[in-house]
Image (cartoon, rainbow over all chains, first blue to last red; front, side):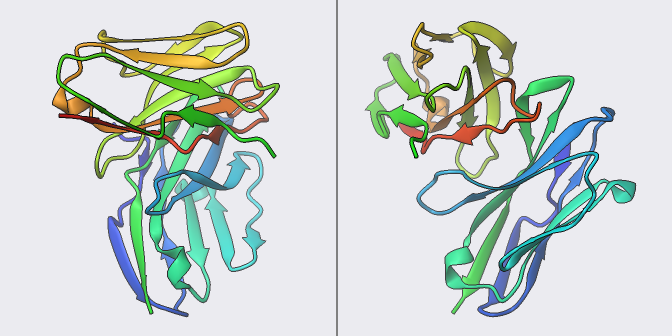
Length: 115
Length: 115
């Protein structure tokens, strides 16, 4: 079963619009870590954020913000005032403390920002 | 700052040939992970090493083997290549096991094409 679900396969927005990428995870561990990675067309995985299960405080970094809600097992990612350079595939990932060796990735959301 | 180095960046092999992918972790990192990302797919965990010992094993085919050397670099050996092995192969490294108060940094990947 997929531990991380990104229901949005593809999203297109017009430049300067806000966009939210959804991520729902599933784990029985009480200690776990959530990540967002960006994969631009060049292919590399770019780390965006890491969150541990004990820290539900939302975070803002420039135009990026993350909303972590344990009650709904969600870790959503919002880009404000999107730009063409934001076009990429975004992956949400889970790492569990008891099996901390690997990431469980979601299937990714392909974001296209139209100029 | 030094990042995870993967070589080669691109590799073309014929069916039934062998391939060796190399990964040089960030200095002082003792843990290496290998992931396989097929076209349009999310990265899938293959195998990981901690302090030169295999620490976890994912969906790695029997035709593949890997090891971590005394200098902490790692090699993924792939034999009897099949068309379905065509993918982007990522290496990641961390100090300690990923998720446990540390994070993994990904290399730029090796794109393997089997023809």
